[in-house]
Image 1 (tube, rainbow, N blue to C red):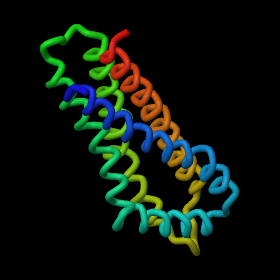
Image 2 (tube, rainbow, N blue to C red):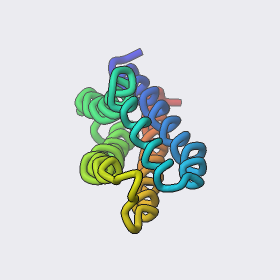
Image 3 (tube, rainbow, N blue to C red):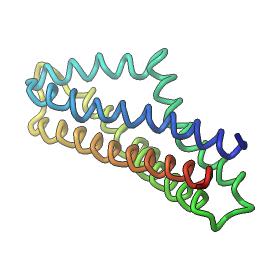
Length: 164
């Protein structure tokens, strides 16, 4: 295998991890969380985020997001000699999808919204907390679409690189 193939294969693997995580959040956890009352939802999010932001949860989240972002950059550098190829174009498009749908969405909307939700007093939920929960669900759907799209694009780039 060439260096480009290795880098794209690793990127595909981590994109698959991200797709699975976001798929679980949207298809399994979302319906469960939608049935919770305000204090139950707030309590669950506090526990969930405590583990997601510590130890192996932090390693997992940083790992898939950083490799999905940095892997395509490395692949594009390695593919510069063939900048017009399908592999190069598919990787570049996948990188843009990851940058906007994962990196920007996480840093501009998702992480700040976590802070908003954790500031809710479970004993006196704010008026309209359901809209805040719906925003959290929408952000997860956006990231699900971004991870699945980039996963498909990176697979297609790898297949195109391997040739017929």
